[in-house]
Structure formats: C-alpha cells, structure tokens
Amino acid sequence: MTTVTLIPGDGIGPEVTAATRQVVDALGVGIEWEVHDAGAPAIEAHGSPLPEHVLRSITTNKVALKGPVTTPVGTGFRSINVALRQELDLFASVRPCRLYPGVASRFDAVDIVVVRENTEDLYEGIEFECSSKEATKLRGFLSYMHGFDMRPDSGISIKPISISATHAIVEYAFEYARKYRRRKVTLGHKANIMKFSDGVWLSEGEARAAEYRDVGFEAIQVDELAMHLAWTPDDMDVIVLPNLYGDIISDLCAGLIGGLGLAPGMNLGKDHAVFEPTHGSAPDIAGKGVANPIAMILSAVLMLRHIGQRDAGDRLERAVATVLANGKIRPADLRPVGEPATTDAVADAIVAALP
Ligand code: NAI
View 1 (cartoon, rainbow, N blue to C red):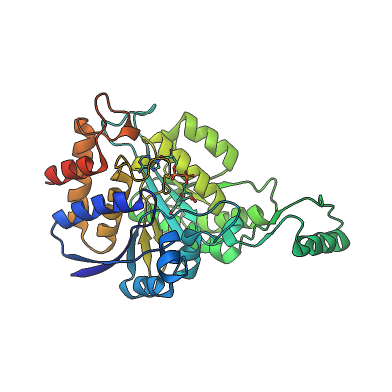
View 2 (view 1 turned 45 degrees about the vertical axis):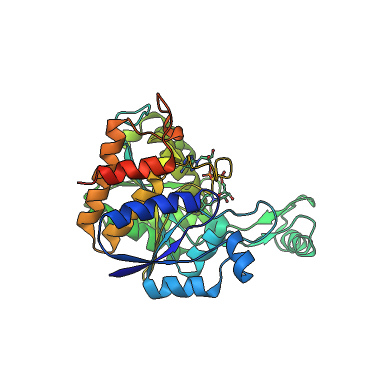
C-alpha cells in the first residue's frame, strides 16, 4: 500500500480528481489517498491557503497528486502552486507533450518534453507595488547608484537567475534525455536582452551541456523557439527553460497535442514529487461536469511510474490511448463530432479500456 497526498484543488479540480481517482483505483495497485484542501477551500476551513498539515502530509508521503488551484489576479494570496514548489524545493517541472493517434492536430507527430526551472526567475515573488513606498525607494536607489531612470508609475518585479538553480535544472534535463534516450536538449533564452539573468542561464547551460557530449545540444532565443514550435515541432525533443518562458512554452506545446485537456505534468525535487496537469482551474467550465480529465489522468500515469508502479502506469496510458484512438467518447475540448462526453463518461471509458 502506498499513501499519496491528494489535493483536489478548486474549479474543475474536484471533478477531474474524482475521475482520476476512479481510474487509478480500478488498476487495483493499492493506493491510499490522503485528501487535503488547498487554496480558497483551505482558507475557509483552516484560515490559510496552504495549511501546515498539507505540507506535512506531502513531506511524509513524498508524493502528491494535485488538481489545479485558483490564484486571485492582482490581489489576494500568492499562488499556492508557486509556494508549494518553493517550500518543497520542487526545482524541476516536467511536462511531456505527446500527440496521441486520433487527436486532431496540425501536425503528424509531436513528442516534446518541456523541462522548466520551477523556483526562481520572475516567479520568485520579489515584487514592488506601483507607487508604494518600497517601489519609490528602490527607484531612488537605482537612479542614485546606477543612473537607471525608471518611470514613477511603474510596478516592479525582479528576475533572479542563479548559477546553482540553472546548474540543477540543466543537469536534470540532460540526465532525463540520457535516461529516456532522447536525441537533443534545446535551451531557450533571451540573453541578448537580459544579459545578466539570462546571461547566467545561457553560460551555465552551455557549461553543463559540454559534460553531455552523447546528447545533442542547441541554445536558441525563446522567441525563435516559439516560431520553430509553431512551424516544425517534430524538430524539437527535450526543451529546458527558465520559469516564465517554461510556463508559456509548455502551454504552447499543449496546443500542439490537442490542448490543455491532454497535457500532464510533474514537479520534482530531490525528496518530493507533486503531479499535476498543466491546466488551471478553468472557472469558465467548473461545476458543469464537462472538463477533460485526461491531463490529470496522464499526470497519474507519471505518478504511478515514479512510485515504481511502471506496469500500472503503462496499462493506464494504453487505456487512454485506446479511448483517444477510438474517438467515440470525446469531451467538449477535443471537438467531438457528436455529443460531447462528460468527465465521468471519459473516466468510465478509460476504465473499460484498461488492458
Ligand atoms: P486554465 O488552464 O484554467 O483555462 C484555460 C482554458 O482552457 C479555459 O478555456 C478552460 O476552460 C480550458 N481548459 C483548461 N483545462 C481544461 C480541461 N481539463 N478540460 C477542458 N477545458 C480545459 O487557465 P486560466 O483560465 O488562465 O486559469 C484559471 C485559474 O487557474 C487561475 O486562477 C490560474 O492562476 C490557475 N492556474 C492554476 C494552475 C495550477 O494549479 N497548477 C496552473 C495554471 C493556472
């Protein structure tokens, strides 16, 4: 019996989590779920968006499966997702984007893995509100020390990129490429403009790449990378990116393989792993029972492999592939020809297709 922390989240989170739990339980691998709230539901119940006992559950179990959690825009509590990644030092976000037969796409074959640095960059949370005392002080300091003339009506976010975090994530990307026999690692950057932050990223990335001569390597500007992905995605393999570019590019890659409803993900640290889909809480469709649960189910596939249940993970992925190839049961986001399938109907079809 393996105990896994289960965070249903909010919005469509509880719906896709219930579907995922149903299909994982049908595998009969003996997982005990320890269910906890995070985000707005946790504030109501426990007075904090990320209560201490939730962190304790993950540090004890080492593995969590998590639904999306809404982050208020502009005001309110900071992202639980970012806080979890920082608290547990989940330094690597890994998002495999694979096109399954039967899914409509502009491309014939896409098999890309986005490896995103997860703890720093503009997501570190060093921010100064427009017109605040702190922002005014910082502007004064920058003007006095360096002659930088910043507009007085600016909000400010700081982008730290360290050698150590770059070292860890680029090394992870190469080790991943080696382990799964991928042909190359592409490093995206914007070091021509951000010479000191992306400059560290590029130079440390190139230094690590030199230690992995058996894996191909290229470094390209992230805007050019976006163009290549929209044009010839089959040229891409493993892509390693700093936090913000990784966030954007992994959604772009989800668009290449049928959309967010099919894009799984995992956040890995040295000691803990949190598995979650790339998508958010989708408030526009929450509560309607129409969300596509496959991204969350494929995140559970990654989780099963991580906890040593490789066969169960393979069986579940095969069942998902069968349902997608068959095409009869399709949720609304996959643009079915006939009536769209509900979240529960997709889960039932996957259980029925289990080998
Ligand atoms: P979103 O991913 O929730 O939704 C974008 C679009 O994709 C919407 O039209 C939505 O209906 C659709 N969509 C997403 N997942 C789907 C699914 N499984 N099935 C069918 N359609 C799906 O992104 P959005 O709207 O920017 O974010 C909503 C909230 O989620 C925000 O508060 C954001 O901060 C949060 N969020 C949380 C994440 C997490 O918990 N890891 C990740 C991304 C966003």
